[in-house]
Length: 162
View 1 (spheres, rainbow, N blue to C red):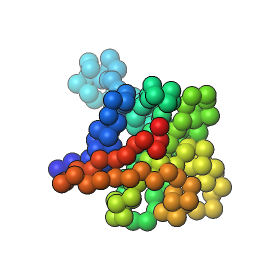
View 2 (cartoon, one colour):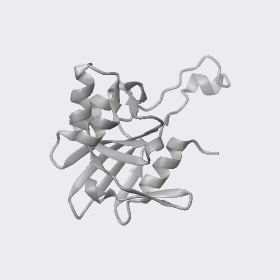
View 3 (cartoon, rainbow, N blue to C red):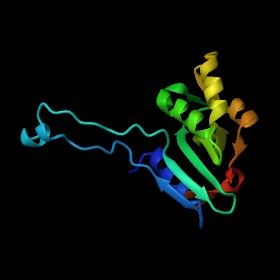
View 4 (cartoon, one colour):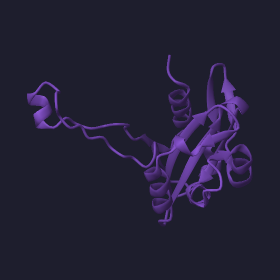
């Protein structure tokens, strides 16, 4: 059985109809030559450090979207769900012309999903007053992404992001 986060990512990506969306690979890497020669022993493995899960482009709105998706239980998303380079990278890249960066936060228990701009995520994180992004914060600062349950899978209205 797939984990809930991966299922959420699949459902969310399928919601981008007629819009380019690409899933960046997690932990894509290669073994160096010493690892290959030694059958995987005493070698070094490198992995990517993506700032987001998806890149989407809408020709209609002429926007490039950088999207980091998080799905979790409860009424808050702990900062530990993010890597520091993700928060910083989304913030930096989201300031560029024609680029919008979002954290897409899926409150599974509440069946609600919000898109929060990376600059707001970064500012809230940097203040250090809390250790999580609360439901209230997302509701006040984010864009509600309406989801519809279709039997066992979800479809999301991503037009608000575009």
